[in-house]
Length: 195
Image 1: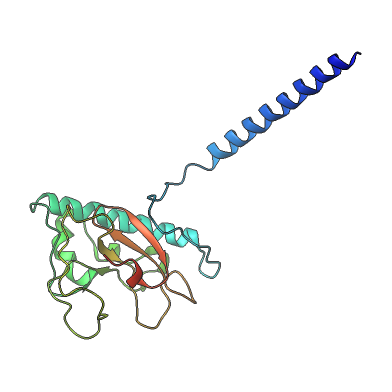
Image 2: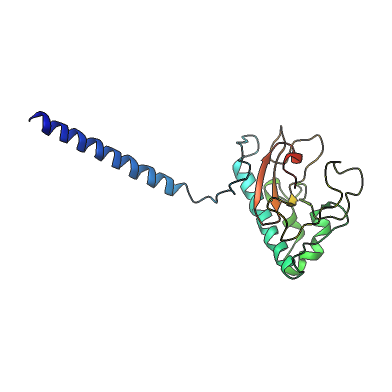
């Protein structure tokens, strides 16, 4: 074969190899794209090998999304207003009466990944911070509606002062539900993302 023929064979082989690689990448991407994508401005979850990591967070996030849907149905019947509690609240105590008509049960206010005895979610639509048990950086009032800015907290995993979050044994790692219905994950101080 002449030099030109070899050059064409090599060029054709390189093109064929590139096409095969492109098809393999497309197939692999399709197989791994079934997970819902997080909002563009959401904090990216970090691996957490100690508690099952992404799987437990995903179960918890799905539960918070369901609660967000129920709360938005409530708000649709109340001129865009979410239930307002006197202070930041333990969700299963304050929200159950408001959501029972929409199928709410006490168990839905607990992260299923943490078991039935896990701490309940906290609700963040309140009139006053109340007693000293709430952090001083939380606003004096936090009234949330369906028109609140993106990222405004409505509910979160239970967070105890000076203890790690529910999705880590060593650091603050938690999910929170926003007024717009999105659930976000944050690794670090809640103060950094509280809106």
